[in-house]
Image 1 (cartoon, helix red, strand yellow):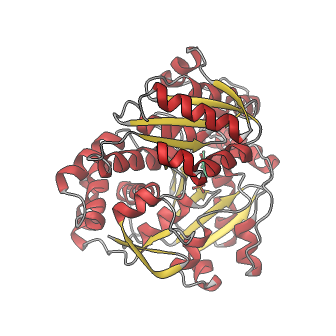
Image 2 (cartoon, rainbow, N blue to C red):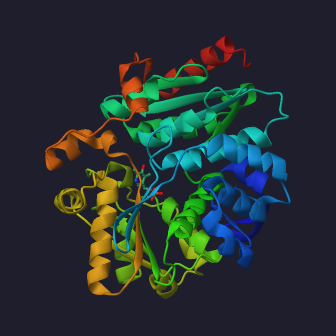
Length: 440
Ligand SMILES: *Cc1c(COP(=O)(O)O)cnc(C)c1O
């Protein structure tokens, strides 16, 4: 598959190059030069296919010129190895649960697939690689889990001390083997700055092979198109128009859906459900893209003031607000509205949602009242409610079941290395670390 940079259509690279680079040299994001339409036979037989079968067929269509069928099979069965149930709440109202991966959030799809791809692509390299990840919470543990135990790879997570939830901190600091958690006395922005500085530092770069696993990597986007197909395949009556409501922040999940539509999936409308960080609905309303500092909300994984995948979306639709508006409906919801949605889902359907999925429900309801009709609607539920039990339990007045995996993780001892946000401290940590692990 050939990919171009959103900053320059003539800057073209292979899939392997795009995965290793992450971001184009010109600062743009990678997108496929052409997106293949899936064959009619696929849509005819999809009902009988497993999630992994669907993932395999789509990846093959996209990547057959670079990765063998057998290798694709291994990558998919090793990384996308958890269930993706479609739960029916009511006639025409469904929830696609994307939180059954190891860290209980939908980031597991992208992070695990990317990790498997990157290890596959760099399998012949003799050098050890250090993956640096700055995280504000969820991404770090999903990425670390994806690379967990893979030979030749060391993961160093940087997270802001005291600024992640207790559950998130346990998930970040209780992996051992090849994962090291660095607790930075500073903010998430400090963590990101340290990673960027390390990549720009010639001394570090000549001694250690560094790689980043950032959220804009194309290998994180592709698997996020698979489950749209799988959800559609599960629908009993396919005659009604299909709507997906996508709780959104950086718009990566939404972009995965847009790719699925380009591949031929008959989607009537995507709903980009956002919290108080309302950059996308404002853009659709005014035609102006105005990034803002992010606002803190209870659906904190969507607290994004400058959604990075916006560049991909405008590129896919030739910079036309009208064309994007034809495919995407977007609305913003407050914390109070989010809480009311958690309550309504529980009282009306006996369903316990997390704050992100609840924003998806709120936006779907508004769409249905503005455009009444007989639809098949699917809300993507992006996190397990137990990750937000403090918020959810207060609203539903009942304990949220904690999955076994999370309960185990909460019992483990935290292991982190505390350092300041000073670059020299980080640099000397990296030197000692590399010597310890025999990387230099
Ligand atoms: C990251 C995340 C989102 C937002 O997804 P984007 O691809 O950034 O739009 C929504 N919900 C949860 C739980 C997340 O972790």
